[in-house]
Image 1: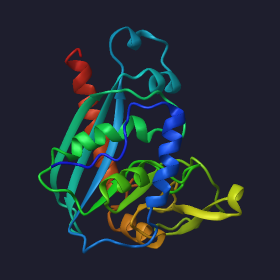
Image 2 (image 1 turned 180 degrees about the horizontal axis):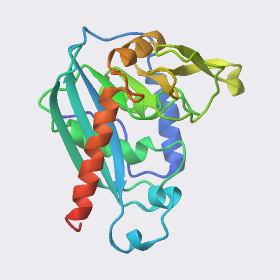
Image 3 (image 1 turned 135 degrees about the vertical axis):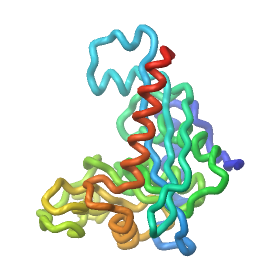
Image 4 (image 1 turned 180 degrees about the vertical axis):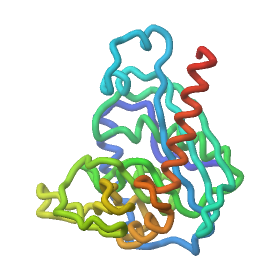
Length: 248
């Protein structure tokens, strides 16, 4: 499967910002997708190797010093949610850890992973932000534009924005809005299970916020994290463990 290349990846943070701003012109916020037969979850992880692994551990050091990126994808039949394919890839990590630019660290490995599939899924769920990003170009939006596919961002925490109180019942949601841009709605805080913390859903590309919420609930199975991204997270965690066990 050959994928179009819209820009380079080995760039400076300043150039990365310029790329994000240019991609905004290609972003689509309305529904444009066919009947969905397959969905996929995508996630990425990072690996320390060599002397870097001896440094004092911390979340920030790990993200900054990691030198391998692992991409994972798990594909399901929809709406039955029967797993039909999975793949992973490990690539050298070229882009530094800079908040707001994680897509430049993760997407190359995700693209390498997607190239291993026989057929591209109809809809991608990304473990990360979409429109709910300081420059409205989170990983889900960036990847969706590159692939010209509908994508949804399903994040565990807020990168930008705030929301009002949310009902405890599963399926409840409230807008995530950005006071810095006049209260613009940039996503939603969505309760996927009674009484648990919400997840943060935002439009990736070629999808409305309403459809993103509806489809996220459709692939949820009573656990806080929707099944596609949850299984992708497990996959990259397994690959990361095996990578270390092999002494690489």
